[in-house]
Length: 431
Picture 1: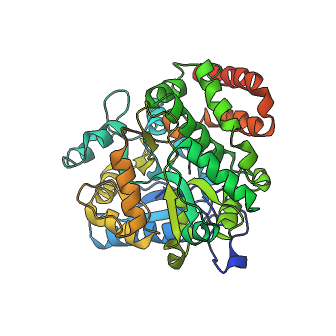
Picture 2: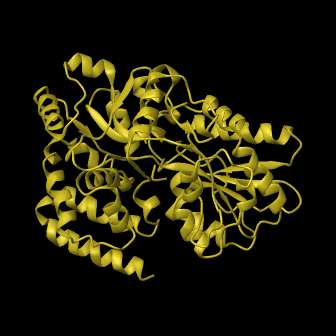
């Protein structure tokens, strides 16, 4: 259900794919918010307000249908206020600390939720979790704060990978790589055909580069080191981190040179138009894609670099948390309980792009080869990570944006960049 919209960009009209932007944290999103971007008024004994960042067309429709169904059940009343995702991201602290905040929010599990919970801003929803005995312990742990209270309700998760058009790979006579050497050979082949092998969209969505850092780090140093690094227990100027950038330099010549100037939406446009070969992105990019384009999409996992390192995959979990200051805690918990049901999650999958995975153990995912492949990839992983800001904090993400975009511009300055990154991270960790 993720909808990472930096928005404000033209979409795919020239391809006849109207409405498809591109990709987070954090999906090819709509150009503007569907309603006012200021904090919505929280409910008292009346309607519960859901503040939603799901602004791409299909995701917005899907969450609105869920609210409509909830209201028909007679267990409460709710309204939804949709905000462009990047606006939502920057305004979330304001929403949560306002005098009369919205009741419920679409957002992320893990460190991000825990950070807000540590400030006393999130509602304790442990009693909602009492009815979720079928949910796996991993999701309960991901939804639990440092004091042992559950503060998050998950609804979907999804995967990241190198997406491409099957028809283009067939036309170019290339196949999915398995190893890093295979990947480099694929890049060289595509470059030889005059196709920029790797799409990237840094424009006003610089966080896209974090996927490259995350994957290279978990492939080279492993998920435990990655988590420790993002928690401040390791240093960004460590030689192990430098090894990540050394490997990254090997593929920099294969990136689309135009990708630094435009956001991920336009990077997706280029991918679908065959102007780039592949794009490391999350499945949310398909939320605004027309259904008839989905059948030509495929993906492969980030190539294995060191076979001795247990394979981890990025599998961000999306859902909801609620304001500790809600004036209608009973209504808020009733809405959150509805979101945990298999029926609600299946309805969301049907109404959206379908390329997300419901977290309820008995909820059915979309019946498509692409979804089956993604689900199997996550199931086979030794460990799962979230995404840079989700495994660290929203406050640390700008330090990554600065370091990673600078590296892509000046790869010969790795040492200086990592020293600067460590200094910036220390300021965040010290508060």
